[in-house]
Length: 475
Image (cartoon, rainbow, N blue to C red):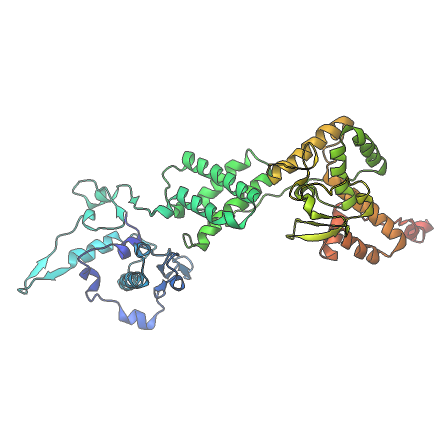
Protein backbone atom coordinates (compact mmCIF):
# COMPACT_ATOMS: atom_id res chain seq x y z
CA UNK A 1 0.00 0.00 0.00
CA UNK A 2 1.46 3.41 -0.96
CA UNK A 3 2.67 5.61 1.86
CA UNK A 4 1.70 9.25 2.26
CA UNK A 5 5.07 10.34 0.86
CA UNK A 6 4.53 8.27 -2.28
CA UNK A 7 1.67 10.53 -3.36
CA UNK A 8 4.07 13.46 -3.20
CA UNK A 9 7.11 12.01 -4.95
CA UNK A 10 5.55 9.97 -7.77
CA UNK A 11 6.15 11.14 -11.33
CA UNK A 12 2.96 11.20 -13.42
CA UNK A 13 2.00 12.93 -16.62
CA UNK A 14 -1.45 13.61 -15.22
CA UNK A 15 -0.37 16.00 -12.51
CA UNK A 16 -3.48 18.04 -13.25
CA UNK A 17 -5.10 15.79 -10.64
CA UNK A 18 -3.33 17.97 -8.10
CA UNK A 19 -3.46 21.20 -10.10
CA UNK A 20 -7.25 21.60 -10.39
CA UNK A 21 -9.12 23.88 -8.04
CA UNK A 22 -10.46 21.65 -5.29
CA UNK A 23 -12.55 22.91 -2.43
CA UNK A 24 -9.85 23.71 0.16
CA UNK A 25 -12.40 24.67 2.80
CA UNK A 26 -11.27 28.28 3.01
CA UNK A 27 -13.58 28.94 5.95
CA UNK A 28 -11.76 26.32 8.05
CA UNK A 29 -8.39 27.79 7.07
CA UNK A 30 -9.47 31.24 8.18
CA UNK A 31 -11.28 30.34 11.38
CA UNK A 32 -9.54 27.23 12.74
CA UNK A 33 -5.98 26.22 13.28
CA UNK A 34 -4.61 24.11 10.48
CA UNK A 35 -3.81 20.45 11.18
CA UNK A 36 -0.41 20.84 9.49
CA UNK A 37 2.55 23.19 9.19
CA UNK A 38 3.63 24.66 5.84
CA UNK A 39 6.13 22.40 4.04
CA UNK A 40 9.75 23.58 4.19
CA UNK A 41 12.84 22.74 2.17
CA UNK A 42 16.09 21.61 3.81
CA UNK A 43 19.03 22.34 1.49
CA UNK A 44 21.93 21.58 3.92
CA UNK A 45 23.15 25.13 3.35
CA UNK A 46 23.99 24.23 -0.23
CA UNK A 47 26.12 21.18 0.66
CA UNK A 48 25.54 18.64 -2.13
CA UNK A 49 27.29 15.89 -0.18
CA UNK A 50 24.38 15.83 2.29
CA UNK A 51 20.79 14.72 1.78
CA UNK A 52 18.25 17.41 0.87
CA UNK A 53 14.56 16.98 1.61
CA UNK A 54 11.15 18.54 2.30
CA UNK A 55 9.77 18.37 5.82
CA UNK A 56 6.54 19.30 7.60
CA UNK A 57 4.55 18.59 10.75
CA UNK A 58 1.03 17.27 11.24
CA UNK A 59 -1.16 17.28 14.33
CA UNK A 60 -1.17 14.01 16.21
CA UNK A 61 -4.84 12.92 16.41
CA UNK A 62 -4.31 11.67 19.97
CA UNK A 63 -2.99 14.84 21.59
CA UNK A 64 -3.55 17.55 18.98
CA UNK A 65 0.11 18.57 18.97
CA UNK A 66 2.14 19.09 15.81
CA UNK A 67 4.53 16.20 15.20
CA UNK A 68 7.37 16.13 12.70
CA UNK A 69 6.66 13.69 9.87
CA UNK A 70 9.18 11.64 7.92
CA UNK A 71 11.42 13.61 5.59
CA UNK A 72 10.48 13.54 1.91
CA UNK A 73 13.52 12.74 -0.25
CA UNK A 74 12.09 11.33 -3.46
CA UNK A 75 14.80 11.29 -6.12
CA UNK A 76 16.22 14.70 -5.29
CA UNK A 77 19.61 13.51 -3.99
CA UNK A 78 20.39 11.85 -7.32
CA UNK A 79 20.80 15.32 -8.84
CA UNK A 80 24.25 16.93 -8.68
CA UNK A 81 23.46 20.65 -8.98
CA UNK A 82 21.79 23.00 -6.52
CA UNK A 83 19.43 24.32 -9.18
CA UNK A 84 18.10 20.87 -10.08
CA UNK A 85 17.65 19.88 -6.43
CA UNK A 86 15.81 23.09 -5.55
CA UNK A 87 13.58 22.75 -8.60
CA UNK A 88 12.49 19.23 -7.66
CA UNK A 89 12.10 20.01 -3.95
CA UNK A 90 9.96 23.04 -4.84
CA UNK A 91 7.80 20.70 -6.88
CA UNK A 92 7.51 18.26 -3.94
CA UNK A 93 6.73 21.12 -1.54
CA UNK A 94 3.98 22.53 -3.79
CA UNK A 95 2.49 19.07 -4.33
CA UNK A 96 2.57 18.33 -0.60
CA UNK A 97 0.79 21.57 0.24
CA UNK A 98 -1.97 20.79 -2.27
CA UNK A 99 -2.44 17.29 -0.84
CA UNK A 100 -2.68 18.68 2.69
CA UNK A 101 -5.23 21.26 1.58
CA UNK A 102 -7.23 18.49 -0.11
CA UNK A 103 -7.44 16.67 3.22
CA UNK A 104 -4.76 14.02 2.74
CA UNK A 105 -3.65 12.82 6.18
CA UNK A 106 -0.32 11.05 6.96
CA UNK A 107 -2.02 9.21 9.86
CA UNK A 108 -4.54 7.56 7.52
CA UNK A 109 -4.64 5.37 4.41
CA UNK A 110 -5.06 7.90 1.59
CA UNK A 111 -5.44 5.50 -1.34
CA UNK A 112 -9.23 5.57 -1.45
CA UNK A 113 -9.21 9.37 -1.25
CA UNK A 114 -6.74 9.57 -4.13
CA UNK A 115 -8.71 7.13 -6.29
CA UNK A 116 -11.95 8.98 -5.54
CA UNK A 117 -10.42 12.23 -6.78
CA UNK A 118 -9.18 10.46 -9.89
CA UNK A 119 -12.57 8.95 -10.58
CA UNK A 120 -14.46 12.21 -10.20
CA UNK A 121 -11.95 14.10 -12.32
CA UNK A 122 -13.46 15.10 -15.65
CA UNK A 123 -11.03 15.83 -18.45
CA UNK A 124 -12.05 18.46 -21.04
CA UNK A 125 -10.82 17.59 -24.55
CA UNK A 126 -10.01 20.18 -27.22
CA UNK A 127 -13.66 20.15 -28.44
CA UNK A 128 -15.02 21.00 -25.08
CA UNK A 129 -16.39 17.49 -24.57
CA UNK A 130 -16.25 15.94 -21.14
CA UNK A 131 -14.31 12.71 -21.01
CA UNK A 132 -14.73 10.79 -17.76
CA UNK A 133 -11.54 8.89 -16.98
CA UNK A 134 -12.04 5.36 -15.77
CA UNK A 135 -11.00 4.37 -12.30
CA UNK A 136 -7.29 3.56 -12.56
CA UNK A 137 -5.67 0.44 -11.24
CA UNK A 138 -2.93 0.77 -8.71
CA UNK A 139 -0.30 -0.04 -11.35
CA UNK A 140 -1.28 3.08 -13.29
CA UNK A 141 0.05 5.19 -10.42
CA UNK A 142 3.85 5.15 -10.86
CA UNK A 143 4.71 5.45 -7.19
CA UNK A 144 8.06 4.84 -5.54
CA UNK A 145 6.60 1.52 -4.36
CA UNK A 146 6.06 -1.42 -6.67
CA UNK A 147 2.77 -3.19 -6.08
CA UNK A 148 1.78 -6.64 -7.26
CA UNK A 149 -2.03 -6.33 -7.43
CA UNK A 150 -4.25 -9.37 -7.46
CA UNK A 151 -7.02 -9.65 -10.04
CA UNK A 152 -10.65 -9.63 -8.97
CA UNK A 153 -13.84 -7.60 -9.11
CA UNK A 154 -13.54 -6.34 -5.56
CA UNK A 155 -11.21 -3.34 -5.17
CA UNK A 156 -10.26 -4.38 -1.60
CA UNK A 157 -8.77 -7.60 -2.98
CA UNK A 158 -6.41 -5.61 -5.19
CA UNK A 159 -4.86 -3.79 -2.26
CA UNK A 160 -3.81 -6.88 -0.27
CA UNK A 161 -0.45 -7.40 -1.96
CA UNK A 162 2.83 -6.93 -0.11
CA UNK A 163 4.54 -3.57 -0.52
CA UNK A 164 7.98 -3.63 -2.09
CA UNK A 165 9.96 -0.45 -1.68
CA UNK A 166 12.65 0.80 -4.02
CA UNK A 167 15.36 1.58 -1.46
CA UNK A 168 18.36 3.83 -2.19
CA UNK A 169 21.67 2.03 -1.70
CA UNK A 170 22.76 4.19 1.22
CA UNK A 171 19.51 3.35 3.04
CA UNK A 172 20.00 -0.42 2.85
CA UNK A 173 20.67 -1.66 6.38
CA UNK A 174 24.03 -3.30 5.69
CA UNK A 175 25.27 -0.38 3.57
CA UNK A 176 24.13 2.22 6.09
CA UNK A 177 26.07 0.55 8.91
CA UNK A 178 29.13 0.02 6.69
CA UNK A 179 29.18 3.68 5.64
CA UNK A 180 28.70 4.88 9.24
CA UNK A 181 31.61 2.76 10.47
CA UNK A 182 33.85 4.12 7.71
CA UNK A 183 32.92 7.70 8.63
CA UNK A 184 33.62 7.14 12.33
CA UNK A 185 36.93 5.28 11.91
CA UNK A 186 39.24 8.31 11.46
CA UNK A 187 38.01 10.05 14.61
CA UNK A 188 38.24 7.27 17.20
CA UNK A 189 40.80 4.84 18.61
CA UNK A 190 41.31 1.44 17.02
CA UNK A 191 39.91 -0.30 20.08
CA UNK A 192 36.77 1.82 19.87
CA UNK A 193 36.13 1.04 16.21
CA UNK A 194 36.70 -2.66 16.97
CA UNK A 195 33.97 -2.44 19.60
CA UNK A 196 31.65 -0.67 17.16
CA UNK A 197 32.29 -3.29 14.47
CA UNK A 198 31.71 -6.23 16.80
CA UNK A 199 28.39 -4.80 18.03
CA UNK A 200 27.23 -3.96 14.50
CA UNK A 201 28.07 -7.46 13.21
CA UNK A 202 26.18 -9.03 16.12
CA UNK A 203 23.16 -6.85 15.35
CA UNK A 204 23.28 -7.61 11.61
CA UNK A 205 23.43 -11.36 12.30
CA UNK A 206 20.40 -11.00 14.58
CA UNK A 207 18.51 -8.99 11.92
CA UNK A 208 19.26 -11.61 9.28
CA UNK A 209 17.78 -14.36 11.46
CA UNK A 210 14.86 -12.58 13.14
CA UNK A 211 13.86 -9.79 10.75
CA UNK A 212 15.00 -10.90 7.26
CA UNK A 213 12.28 -8.88 5.49
CA UNK A 214 13.51 -5.54 6.80
CA UNK A 215 15.76 -3.89 4.23
CA UNK A 216 15.83 -0.14 4.86
CA UNK A 217 17.62 1.46 7.81
CA UNK A 218 14.55 3.54 8.71
CA UNK A 219 12.59 0.31 9.31
CA UNK A 220 14.63 -0.40 12.45
CA UNK A 221 12.35 0.84 15.22
CA UNK A 222 12.44 0.48 18.99
CA UNK A 223 10.68 -2.88 18.84
CA UNK A 224 13.45 -4.30 16.66
CA UNK A 225 16.21 -2.73 18.75
CA UNK A 226 14.67 -3.89 22.02
CA UNK A 227 14.28 -7.43 20.65
CA UNK A 228 18.01 -7.53 19.92
CA UNK A 229 18.97 -6.14 23.33
CA UNK A 230 16.63 -8.58 25.10
CA UNK A 231 18.28 -11.46 23.25
CA UNK A 232 21.71 -10.02 24.04
CA UNK A 233 20.93 -9.83 27.74
CA UNK A 234 20.56 -13.62 27.90
CA UNK A 235 24.19 -14.31 27.03
CA UNK A 236 26.32 -11.37 28.21
CA UNK A 237 27.04 -9.42 31.37
CA UNK A 238 25.32 -6.14 32.19
CA UNK A 239 28.51 -4.25 31.33
CA UNK A 240 28.78 -5.90 27.90
CA UNK A 241 25.05 -5.31 27.34
CA UNK A 242 25.51 -1.59 28.06
CA UNK A 243 28.60 -1.36 25.86
CA UNK A 244 26.68 -2.95 22.99
CA UNK A 245 23.86 -0.44 23.35
CA UNK A 246 26.33 2.47 23.53
CA UNK A 247 28.21 1.23 20.44
CA UNK A 248 25.08 0.84 18.31
CA UNK A 249 23.74 4.15 19.56
CA UNK A 250 26.97 5.90 18.50
CA UNK A 251 26.92 4.33 15.02
CA UNK A 252 23.25 5.09 14.38
CA UNK A 253 23.66 8.63 15.71
CA UNK A 254 26.14 9.10 12.87
CA UNK A 255 23.31 8.18 10.47
CA UNK A 256 21.13 10.83 12.12
CA UNK A 257 23.95 13.38 11.79
CA UNK A 258 24.18 12.60 8.07
CA UNK A 259 20.41 12.94 7.55
CA UNK A 260 19.65 9.29 6.87
CA UNK A 261 17.40 9.19 9.95
CA UNK A 262 15.55 11.69 12.12
CA UNK A 263 16.15 9.65 15.29
CA UNK A 264 17.40 6.19 16.18
CA UNK A 265 15.85 3.61 18.54
CA UNK A 266 18.86 2.71 20.69
CA UNK A 267 18.89 6.09 22.40
CA UNK A 268 15.51 5.21 23.95
CA UNK A 269 16.75 1.95 25.50
CA UNK A 270 18.01 2.17 29.08
CA UNK A 271 21.25 0.72 30.39
CA UNK A 272 21.22 -2.11 32.89
CA UNK A 273 22.46 -1.53 36.40
CA UNK A 274 25.97 -2.90 36.83
CA UNK A 275 27.99 -4.01 39.80
CA UNK A 276 31.40 -2.37 39.36
CA UNK A 277 34.50 -4.49 39.82
CA UNK A 278 35.82 -4.11 43.33
CA UNK A 279 39.61 -3.72 43.40
CA UNK A 280 40.58 -4.78 46.91
CA UNK A 281 43.44 -3.00 48.65
CA UNK A 282 46.51 -5.05 49.57
CA UNK A 283 47.90 -5.06 53.09
CA UNK A 284 51.54 -3.93 53.47
CA UNK A 285 52.70 -7.45 54.26
CA UNK A 286 50.94 -8.78 51.14
CA UNK A 287 52.71 -6.22 48.95
CA UNK A 288 56.10 -7.19 50.38
CA UNK A 289 55.40 -10.89 49.82
CA UNK A 290 54.40 -10.31 46.18
CA UNK A 291 57.37 -8.04 45.42
CA UNK A 292 59.86 -10.47 46.98
CA UNK A 293 58.40 -13.36 45.00
CA UNK A 294 58.45 -11.52 41.65
CA UNK A 295 62.13 -10.55 41.98
CA UNK A 296 63.06 -14.09 40.94
CA UNK A 297 59.83 -15.38 39.40
CA UNK A 298 59.17 -12.57 36.87
CA UNK A 299 61.33 -9.37 36.98
CA UNK A 300 59.49 -7.80 33.99
CA UNK A 301 56.14 -8.23 35.73
CA UNK A 302 57.65 -6.82 38.94
CA UNK A 303 58.71 -3.59 37.19
CA UNK A 304 55.29 -3.40 35.55
CA UNK A 305 53.63 -3.62 38.99
CA UNK A 306 56.07 -1.08 40.44
CA UNK A 307 55.10 1.45 37.76
CA UNK A 308 51.46 1.08 38.81
CA UNK A 309 52.29 1.21 42.52
CA UNK A 310 55.10 3.80 42.77
CA UNK A 311 54.01 5.97 39.83
CA UNK A 312 50.27 5.79 40.66
CA UNK A 313 49.56 4.84 37.03
CA UNK A 314 46.65 2.89 35.65
CA UNK A 315 47.61 -0.41 33.95
CA UNK A 316 46.41 0.87 30.58
CA UNK A 317 48.65 3.94 30.92
CA UNK A 318 51.66 1.70 31.61
CA UNK A 319 50.86 -0.37 28.50
CA UNK A 320 51.00 2.78 26.36
CA UNK A 321 54.44 3.88 27.56
CA UNK A 322 57.29 3.97 25.08
CA UNK A 323 60.99 4.53 25.79
CA UNK A 324 60.77 8.02 24.28
CA UNK A 325 58.04 9.03 26.76
CA UNK A 326 60.47 8.80 29.68
CA UNK A 327 62.66 11.88 30.36
CA UNK A 328 65.35 10.77 32.85
CA UNK A 329 67.06 14.18 32.80
CA UNK A 330 63.98 16.04 34.08
CA UNK A 331 62.69 12.99 35.95
CA UNK A 332 59.28 13.00 34.30
CA UNK A 333 57.16 10.99 31.92
CA UNK A 334 54.67 11.99 29.22
CA UNK A 335 51.67 9.72 28.99
CA UNK A 336 48.17 9.40 27.63
CA UNK A 337 45.62 9.15 30.42
CA UNK A 338 42.05 8.00 30.78
CA UNK A 339 40.54 11.49 30.59
CA UNK A 340 43.08 13.62 28.72
CA UNK A 341 45.19 13.15 25.63
CA UNK A 342 48.72 13.74 26.94
CA UNK A 343 49.98 14.87 30.35
CA UNK A 344 53.34 15.19 32.10
CA UNK A 345 53.84 13.37 35.43
CA UNK A 346 56.72 13.38 37.86
CA UNK A 347 58.72 10.17 38.12
CA UNK A 348 59.29 9.56 41.84
CA UNK A 349 62.78 8.68 43.06
CA UNK A 350 61.59 5.31 44.32
CA UNK A 351 60.63 4.39 40.73
CA UNK A 352 63.77 5.84 39.14
CA UNK A 353 65.83 3.66 41.47
CA UNK A 354 64.41 0.44 39.97
CA UNK A 355 64.51 1.51 36.29
CA UNK A 356 67.12 -0.24 34.10
CA UNK A 357 69.39 1.73 31.76
CA UNK A 358 67.22 3.03 28.90
CA UNK A 359 69.85 5.22 27.17
CA UNK A 360 70.65 2.84 24.30
CA UNK A 361 67.07 1.73 23.61
CA UNK A 362 64.96 2.74 20.61
CA UNK A 363 62.61 5.58 21.71
CA UNK A 364 59.84 4.13 19.51
CA UNK A 365 59.83 0.77 21.29
CA UNK A 366 57.36 -0.06 24.05
CA UNK A 367 58.72 0.04 27.59
CA UNK A 368 57.00 -3.25 28.42
CA UNK A 369 56.80 -6.31 26.15
CA UNK A 370 56.27 -9.98 27.04
CA UNK A 371 59.99 -10.85 26.83
CA UNK A 372 62.01 -7.68 27.38
CA UNK A 373 62.10 -4.06 28.53
CA UNK A 374 62.19 -1.72 25.55
CA UNK A 375 61.21 -3.97 22.66
CA UNK A 376 58.94 -4.23 19.62
CA UNK A 377 55.41 -5.48 20.32
CA UNK A 378 52.97 -5.66 17.44
CA UNK A 379 49.72 -6.01 19.37
CA UNK A 380 46.61 -3.91 19.99
CA UNK A 381 46.23 -1.88 23.17
CA UNK A 382 43.60 -4.25 24.53
CA UNK A 383 45.75 -7.30 23.81
CA UNK A 384 48.74 -5.75 25.58
CA UNK A 385 46.59 -5.03 28.62
CA UNK A 386 45.06 -8.51 28.62
CA UNK A 387 48.50 -10.12 28.41
CA UNK A 388 49.71 -8.61 31.67
CA UNK A 389 46.36 -9.16 33.43
CA UNK A 390 46.44 -12.87 32.59
CA UNK A 391 50.15 -13.05 33.36
CA UNK A 392 49.58 -11.57 36.81
CA UNK A 393 46.78 -14.05 37.49
CA UNK A 394 48.92 -17.03 36.43
CA UNK A 395 52.16 -15.95 38.14
CA UNK A 396 50.82 -14.34 41.34
CA UNK A 397 47.12 -14.87 42.04
CA UNK A 398 47.10 -18.59 41.31
CA UNK A 399 50.31 -19.03 43.27
CA UNK A 400 48.97 -17.37 46.42
CA UNK A 401 45.32 -18.43 45.87
CA UNK A 402 44.13 -14.82 45.96
CA UNK A 403 40.55 -13.58 45.62
CA UNK A 404 39.49 -12.38 42.16
CA UNK A 405 39.05 -8.79 43.45
CA UNK A 406 42.82 -8.50 44.01
CA UNK A 407 43.99 -7.10 40.68
CA UNK A 408 46.82 -5.15 39.08
CA UNK A 409 44.66 -2.05 39.47
CA UNK A 410 44.58 -2.76 43.22
CA UNK A 411 48.21 -1.66 43.50
CA UNK A 412 47.23 1.87 42.47
CA UNK A 413 44.54 2.04 45.15
CA UNK A 414 46.87 0.46 47.73
CA UNK A 415 49.69 2.93 47.29
CA UNK A 416 47.31 5.92 47.18
CA UNK A 417 46.04 4.76 50.57
CA UNK A 418 49.65 4.53 51.85
CA UNK A 419 50.42 8.07 50.67
CA UNK A 420 47.18 9.52 52.07
CA UNK A 421 47.76 7.93 55.47
CA UNK A 422 51.21 9.55 55.65
CA UNK A 423 49.86 12.94 54.51
CA UNK A 424 47.21 12.87 57.23
CA UNK A 425 49.94 12.45 59.87
CA UNK A 426 51.34 15.86 58.90
CA UNK A 427 48.42 17.82 57.41
CA UNK A 428 44.76 18.61 57.87
CA UNK A 429 42.25 16.65 55.84
CA UNK A 430 41.87 19.43 53.27
CA UNK A 431 45.63 19.99 52.91
CA UNK A 432 46.25 16.26 52.63
CA UNK A 433 43.70 15.94 49.83
CA UNK A 434 45.10 18.97 48.01
CA UNK A 435 48.55 17.37 47.98
CA UNK A 436 47.12 14.00 47.00
CA UNK A 437 45.29 15.48 43.99
CA UNK A 438 48.60 16.43 42.38
CA UNK A 439 49.83 12.85 42.72
CA UNK A 440 46.68 10.99 41.61
CA UNK A 441 45.78 13.36 38.79
CA UNK A 442 42.16 13.89 39.85
CA UNK A 443 40.81 17.12 38.35
CA UNK A 444 38.55 18.20 41.24
CA UNK A 445 38.35 17.71 44.99
CA UNK A 446 34.87 16.28 44.54
CA UNK A 447 36.22 13.57 42.22
CA UNK A 448 38.99 12.74 44.69
CA UNK A 449 36.52 12.59 47.61
CA UNK A 450 34.36 10.15 45.67
CA UNK A 451 37.41 8.05 44.83
CA UNK A 452 38.53 7.92 48.48
CA UNK A 453 35.03 6.93 49.62
CA UNK A 454 34.52 4.31 46.91
CA UNK A 455 37.76 2.56 47.78
CA UNK A 456 37.49 2.99 51.56
CA UNK A 457 40.80 4.86 51.64
CA UNK A 458 39.45 7.60 53.89
CA UNK A 459 38.18 6.02 57.11
CA UNK A 460 36.61 8.01 59.92
CA UNK A 461 38.60 8.42 63.13
CA UNK A 462 37.68 6.63 66.38
CA UNK A 463 34.37 8.09 67.58
CA UNK A 464 34.40 6.52 71.06
CA UNK A 465 34.88 9.87 72.83
CA UNK A 466 31.55 11.06 71.44
CA UNK A 467 29.82 8.13 73.08
CA UNK A 468 31.75 8.56 76.36
CA UNK A 469 30.23 12.03 76.79
CA UNK A 470 26.77 11.11 75.49
CA UNK A 471 23.67 9.82 77.22
CA UNK A 472 25.09 6.33 76.70
CA UNK A 473 28.11 7.26 78.88
CA UNK A 474 25.82 8.15 81.78
CA UNK A 475 24.07 4.77 81.78
